[in-house]
Length: 245
Image 1: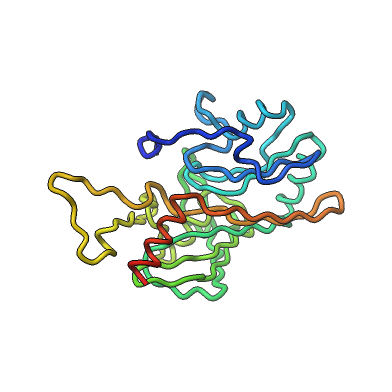
Image 2: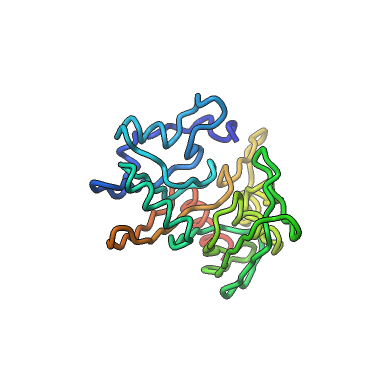
């Protein structure tokens, strides 16, 4: 994963903010930045960046390092507790967008296969010992060889969207852990050729998953947010629309 991010330039925290008030900060997290401290805490991550911006900041949930999109950050302990309760009671509505391999017609498909956390960031489907996991899928756009899908996780298990899609033979492109293959321009553009000795790189150098929208209520106030696609996700979609439709 780190190799994919060698040329990644870390933005300033205030450049990530899409909303802020007295209690909350909402950021559009770029890929290749962890939500929380990893390993011995040496890496730049959203939590550390947020605390440099506001000393009492706490990240309310997490998304995978390669995943882009919305993260909620509380600016005080009371707000953190309130948001945590909303997540615990599954009242936070989350929408992700993913680009998956193959053409798949999902019309509010429910996948509720239990997930067992094996440790060390590995999970598996285990109907006997796994924990409840529920995700709904809806196809948004079709291409010849790929599909843009809306994913609505009800629970929040590790790798939930990724593994649930894999069980439907619909792995996210670029997600090698779940047998998802990257997209190369030569695969979709007729007549595309490389210069001699040139190595072709995938259009998107990570798996194509983006935390698109969040909505919830705390202290009697309704919140709703949407995060635009980052450049790599938008570029992949544009190329698919142009050459694979």
